[in-house]
Length: 504
Ligand code: IMP
Image (cartoon, rainbow, N blue to C red; front, side):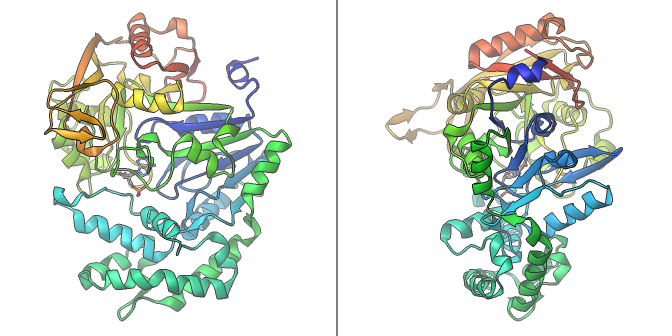
């Protein structure tokens, strides 16, 4: 039995999810575990996530289709679950790209109950973020602009639409009219030029939905979405029932999480979160199962650093607020950063420069938006918080990014340096030391990291394939983090290739 066989022995339902702020490298393991599964499901989130697939020597980025689509040719079922927010335009573009590359999707199924992203959701998402730019008091989230928040808001407000509505024109019209009413009223209060500009964004099909009088052209939305429905009809069905039956029939299921625990709408660093449940229970629910159905949850953790995209507290960020500001600016791309900063070193004494170097070494630029990801040291108060909720089994990724780093720091606790704060029955005074993070942005923004330092291992780990052969200094750091956080590493990843995997 190989390493995966041992790990998956007795496991029928496996969930792979992020334990930090997303982009931990879940895709590599979702791909590896898809090979072992019969059914692969995406369960929450939508086109806000980006996953890079390497096929036929080409690189494709999918936002909605699960990475298991590469195994469609082997009869594996890929599902877009009921917990997802689906923008059919993006989905159809992805299917066209797969078709072009000769990647089949004969066993793809899409939940009839998935939440439907409509033009008004994307417009509202983009405008809200735009209006909050440059004023910290307005609490800008820095969303991906894919309409995720407004789509889920509609669902909870009970005036949302679902994928199946595209197949029933009269219901589509009725529900669209209801859903649009308050959106139009709100958009009419905004600067018409801004509304017009956003409505012409490429994510809104370059203005086809824009009507100067009513903001939205109702008939064009109906026509487009009916067309999307016809295109997708063959894939749409009750996936929740399908998943439950597959489980009963003893099929092996891989549920792949999108975003990550610290971005979970309920458990994350509120309000700087996404709008779906990215926790194991939310992932299971989004596929039509319950938390109790999960046999193994593997939480992916970048090590010994982490990243965050968008706004929100990040206590260990290299370069602090300077980095946050830089990464939040429009138009900063990998190429532009390289042009301005050239070859900065991961050992730079300046935190900001170090952060740029880590970004470059780890290729930390968003697959969906191209935005630079903010970078910082591994934060144990946040990791402890995630492990307390989701269990200790983790996959440590991207270790090789730090192969040349002379000093490794791990944040082992926080010192709260903000004003007195009431946290339920607990009173947080200035100077309080916290071992476990509190998922509240108003607290986290005042948390100063307390670090432990370690000498770097300074050797190439990318060719190592056994835990024993890892450098002693690296094993020491992992051992110390195990002791301090309670994590239980199952796999260590030392590069992007599947083979660059070490079983612990
Ligand atoms: P939204 O999901 O587009 O509403 O964005 C909410 C927050 O979640 C923003 O800070 C985004 O940068 C972040 N976010 C959303 N999707 C991802 C992801 O796939 N990886 C990392 N961050 C994400």
